[in-house]
Length: 247
Ligand SMILES: NC(=O)c1ccc[n+]([C@@H]2O[C@H](COP(=O)([O-])OP(=O)(O)OC[C@H]3O[C@@H](n4cnc5c(N)ncnc54)[C@H](OP(=O)(O)O)[C@@H]3O)[C@@H](O)[C@H]2O)c1
Image (cartoon, rainbow, N blue to C red; front, side, top):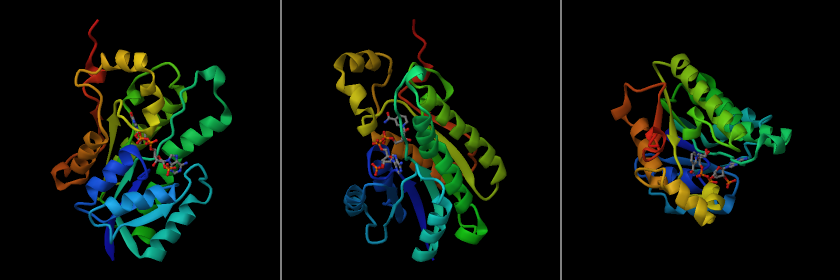
């Protein structure tokens, strides 16, 4: 059976860059909702003949385990690496939050990652083939900011889950997360569209803003043998944003 890396959220932004970059070394399963964009990404991938597409809405978590089990059986694949890039961010002050946004954010950012990890770490469904997981968190996970209440707590939960999984799944599976700072993607388009906000934010980034490839390089490292003794860690890739306390 062919061994794959699953990248959720591979249709856009960071996930797209991660998938294209990983495809130089691994056959990749490209996950997302938008089939046209997933197929476009597949065509760019190096091992595109071997790459597969998995279309699944991660807000709908009730049947997620069942759907993934079916996908693994139908395609006869083993997944050795899992990168969770799919994410939802709606900036809202708490007074404007709704139960539906809280649930959709948590389902996409955390609950789906928990359920996918459960299936992929099971001997029955993935033949004990899983070796490494990288969750894409955010540098807001360990910090705070106005209007980031629900998104930040979803990423904090993802990192807490990562640490427990690192212990629970050792020594067979290494589990880490990457905490990006601001990267130019669809998710941040609205923020960067406001030039005044962009300039203000830029001043807080010692190395300037990031690009999806900066995160993909971190994922490549954490999935590789070079990271064989690294587990349970948050790798912050944010151009120095969160260490800068210049007054
Ligand atoms: N960009 C940043 O500055 C930044 C900073 C820190 C952390 N991050 C994190 O990095 C990850 C990638 O973000 P990005 O900036 O690349 O965002 P993006 O360009 O908006 O991409 C988001 C991806 O998530 C998928 N997705 C969203 N909701 C989904 C759902 N319900 N079901 C299935 N897939 C869903 C999208 O798939 P479809 O379009 O096909 O639905 C898309 O592939 C996220 O976890 C984000 O929180 C980003």
